[in-house]
Length: 210
Image 1: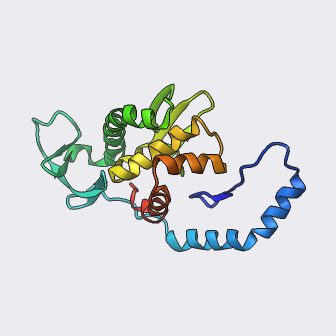
Image 2: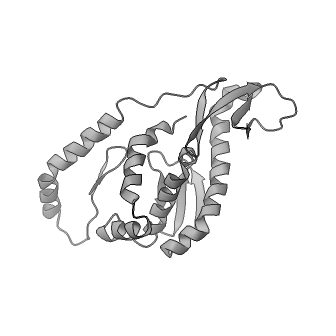
Image 3: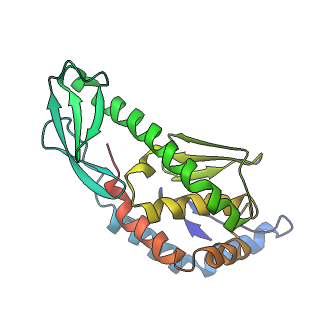
């Protein structure tokens, strides 16, 4: 039983468990559920502040915040680039700043994930059919029934150890499809501190916004 980032209650159980049994479990756990929902509300009291694409604004990449600088550079053939610890955005592209950042995050995260995938796949003992970066709404990652893994482009803003957690989480889903006790046991064997990483993500992940 888990409470997702969007406040949705998710219960994983065997197909033969009768609905009456599930209702009883929910009733028995209602105080725990209320506590988790209150924690979510406390951690997210207001929606994330929308970024302004102006000089001096900070944008996260791999867990660190870097300043944005608007430039008028005819030699810069890309709308947005990262140079010497600073994001450089062409002033003429300011109106579409969010789209340029999303594209930049997607392409750079894809490279990061492809570099991290081989050793992590060997540790988990599973390899995805495909790996892609896209918008997943409230989810950090997803694993399809056919073995396709998707990671949210916002993950590019997280520290590398949190990127590792998200990727390993989805790799384990290739073996254990539900958030069952077996899933968490396997995840713990690979990442003994997974619970600390999961808590950090719930508490600090709201900084990853555009």
